[in-house]
Length: 119
Image (cartoon, rainbow, N blue to C red; front, top):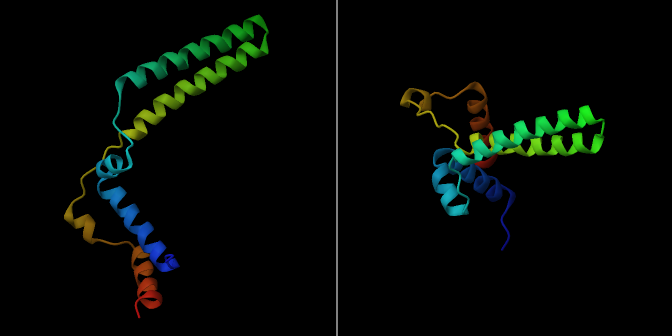
């Protein structure tokens, strides 16, 4: 029996809330390990600076293929660095004061949901 649109929406909201509240549990259940690794940063930096050196040598030698290869290597290095920092997102603990306080948009969304879905 397929899910209705409302059920799909509620399921997506629950998944988003779970991911926000406990990303460690989500990574455990999904099988993805999302911990920062120092080796990835070092490897990314080496690839980034090595790619830049290859780009410069391609410019000096006036061979575009070498410059393109250096760009790809630098791009991979920067991706390794960025993905490592996004993997270890720091979660700032929120106080109970901030949890109870809803913004204007949140209140309007709650009113909309009560009006349209709570019957």
